[in-house]
Length: 258
Image (cartoon, rainbow, N blue to C red; front, side, top):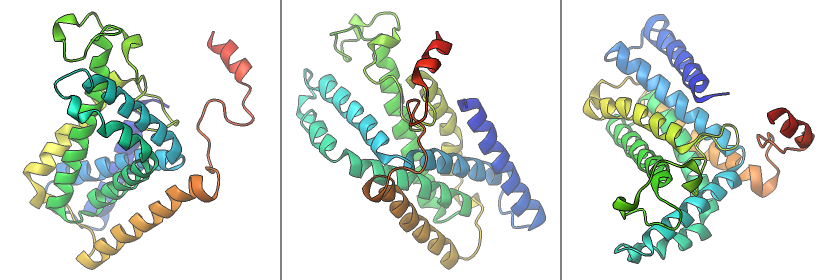
């Protein structure tokens, strides 16, 4: 699986929902472009959230990597007062992981159903902007020499992926490993529909009545909270995307890669 295939799958899902509600059920509001982008972005967020919800611990470990990187980046600078925050964040990485995963999935549901259009537009833009900053920062650390300071721009050298402390963005958990540069470009692409939603929230398509939409959001939130917690509190993940999962001949795979 590649990011291109994921975009294609979500685009097909978005197109199918667009046809279903815009043509068959004639529930379209606003432009066809708005309707499609809502369904596509919603499907994309639901997919990326679900594959992480399978194993929230994996996302928590990735968050700890980010927090460590931020600590060592800010600690020797004028922003050193921010550094102590990140070790504290690491102590609650599992909680942050579950909250972020559920938020991402529910936001996808809100996009598809058109729940609280203005709020949804702002939340989507804010989350995409945050992801863009995160992956952009991680990618740019590839220009920082080993032992150098991120904010000492004059010391930057040619891009070297080995200089990055976080080499995988964790956007799709263990389902798909993306280099920060690829993920950064992916987030930039998502900024276009995010800005479009922000500029024209009143044109966003809505399903059902307000009561039904709110009920769907509440049930989705509760359901995904239970599902996420169940994958590490009460039971093991029902699906293991790791390359060294049980039953995998790691030695043979390594030989094939070489």
